[in-house]
Length: 234
Ligand SMILES: Nc1ncnc2c1ncn2[C@@H]1O[C@H](COP(=O)(O)OP(=O)(O)O)[C@@H](O)[C@H]1O
Ligand SMILES: [Mg+2]
Image 1 (cartoon, rainbow, N blue to C red):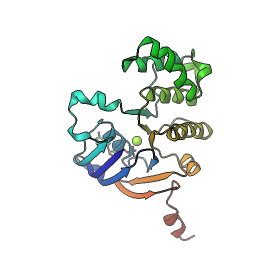
Image 2 (cartoon, rainbow, N blue to C red):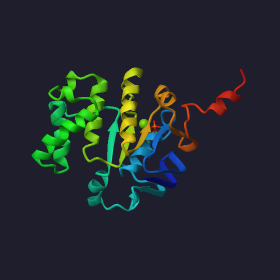
Image 3 (cartoon, helix red, strand yellow):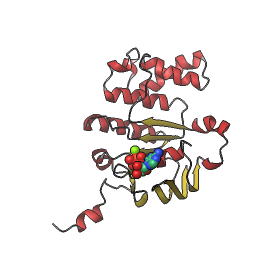
Image 4 (spheres, rainbow, N blue to C red):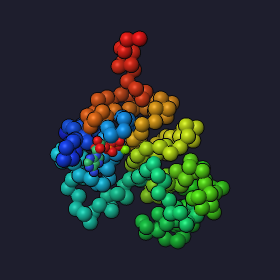
C-alpha cells in the first residue's frame, strides 16, 4: 500500500526526512511516532501529494506519487481518507450535511447520499447526532464526523495526522478504537501521533522518526523503545 525508498525532504537549513525507507502492506495498522519536529507530518504529506520529496521514491497504492500530473491528483486522493488534528468541519453545516457535502464532492447522487450518509454516521457511532452543528459536539464527536467524512469513498487507505491531538486520554482511546475498527474492515491505517497513551494502549506496529531519521520499526511496540529504556542505568 505504501512504499518509501530512500526518501529525503530538505529545507534550506535542515532535513525534515533523511533517507527514509519503509513499506506498509495492505491491511496494516501502523503508528508513526516521534517528538515534535521529527518529520511525521512531512511524511504524511508525501503520501497524499501534499508535498514532493527532494529525493527518493514514494509509491502509494501502486502509484509513484512524484510522477502524478496535477490533474490526476484529485483522483489519486480519492483512494485515501485524511484526518487531521483540527477536525476541519464546515461550522455552519450539521453533522449529516458535513458528510453529505463530502459525498456530493465525489459525485454521489441525492439518493446515494440519503442511503450512505446514515450508514457512515452509524459506523462512527454518531447516528443520534445527525442534526447537531459542530459547535454543539464534543471534540471526540467532531473527530468522529471528520473520520466519517474521510470514509465516504470507502478508501483503501486512511491517513491520520495527530487525530487525538486535541482530545483527552479517554476520548483519544475511543477515536483510536474507531480507527482500529475501520482497519478490521480492511482499510490500511497510518496514524502519526506523539500520544504515548494511545500507542502504549494499542500496541501495534510502531515506526519511529527522530530528527528525520527512521530509528525504529517494531511490531507490537510501545511509544518508547523498551531496549533503550531498560538500558538506561537507574
Ligand atoms: N515549510 C517548512 N520550512 C522549513 N522547515 C520546515 C517546514 N515544514 C517543516 N519544517 C521542519 O521540518 C521538520 C519536520 O517537521 P514536521 O514534519 O512538521 O514534524 P512533526 O510532524 O513530527 O512535528 C521540523 O524541523 C520542521 O521545523
Ligand atoms: Mg506534525
